[in-house]
Image (cartoon, rainbow, N blue to C red; front, top):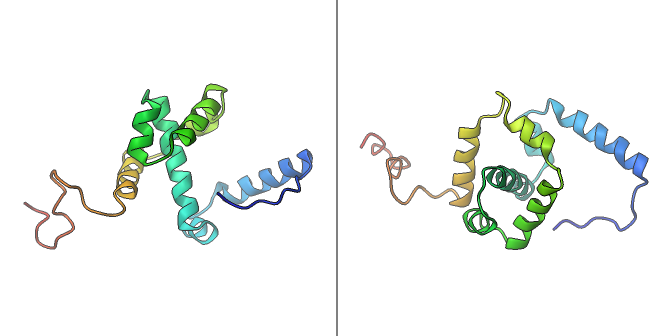
Length: 134
């Protein structure tokens, strides 16, 4: 978890800064995201989005925790927020034509496997030169 100052920002300042931050990343390029967020932070965001989408699809907390290699409390925390109506903007965005769901799940799969090739299946030899056509 990140270290954050215990000194809280006033609500109106926090809201203004959040709006500026969102505006800053509204049209962000991939390079800009890579410059701003560490690999670990990007992984946290990707996994959180995956949890939200899996919960919305009806997966159990147990299945999500095992699949994404997360703690049960992390999944339960996201579920609680989702049940309270949080993440609606994110869900709406993922249903838009700009969100490539198939590509997202490919990235999550690679992330979970730590970059290793699939254990079995059609794509298991794709990483070996000359073997991708078999």
